[in-house]
Image 1 (cartoon, rainbow, N blue to C red):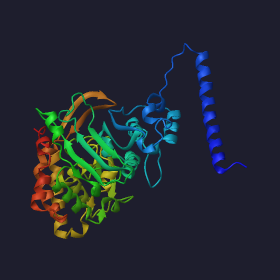
Image 2 (image 1 turned 135 degrees about the vertical axis):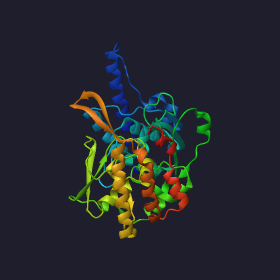
Image 3 (image 1 turned 120 degrees about the vertical axis):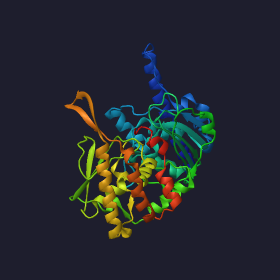
Image 4 (image 1 turned 180 degrees about the vertical axis):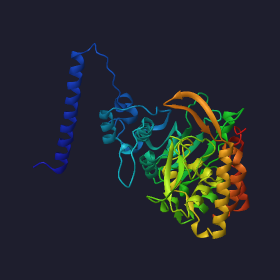
Length: 410
């Protein structure tokens, strides 16, 4: 009578033999077509001393100590490839209420790099900045936050000049330590920008990180470096009402642009005619207050640190809070008056630019929002104290990236 151990051994042998038979069939096929190019790569075969379970039986020791790369991004995949990735990659799967999957090649490479890292190994990749700021990376964030006690991300802009030579997109460098422990620290930096000379070696050796674990949003890690920024975020999140709580199916509109406006966002209570414009609706007694707050330096800073610095997504509007219980009649009147003056001022400073006719468009309106910065500052002087910001914090917000925001406004 065979024992359980005998059955286990025989079963394993049969599976092993079946695997060998499959490989032998492949080898016979290759021998029949020996002149055909053989493009094949298998981690276990090409790096057997690192990843082959027969040579490295201890799973904790299996894998690379360090994985370094600059993976491709934005590659097009066909339906067959999509099906394969969604079947074999955790981060490619969309699970309702839990995560949105990504089929971007760089996120697939992050999961692959994670898989071939040994326990206690680490990974360093240069990737697009969307790793910090996209609904579609929630699957990646979930994987890393469940298995890596330390995640570090530093971020770099391409405007006004690329920090990295030949870079064409805003970039992040991600590091994680795969120790199969829940995340304890997500260390982030501000968005580093270049204007004029920059000692890249000095910059990379002196990056300023701060733990943002307690101020992360869905698919978004804030790009901040200073404790004052973290304190401001906590004060924003202390407010109970988010903009999403105030949105209506019908009502008075606020218009925002989904793209464009590098250092200022155009938020109006009327259509400017832009093809990139989208409306959101509110009660008429609050609509201009929302417009004023979304035009503030405080909101611009919030947008910059949670976004890809290119697109304005509805989530980044809806997640912002409103200190609605502190909006007295007097404050509402003040904000409405300043917002009205601000809208009149941006129209007064706008230029009509002629362009080569394309898609029946031969001109467009160019806003110079920086010329109205003094009015934006007045909005912040009113709203920042409502969020509990100190005078120092308010001045920080009003002067955030001011050297870049005002450089092209003449």
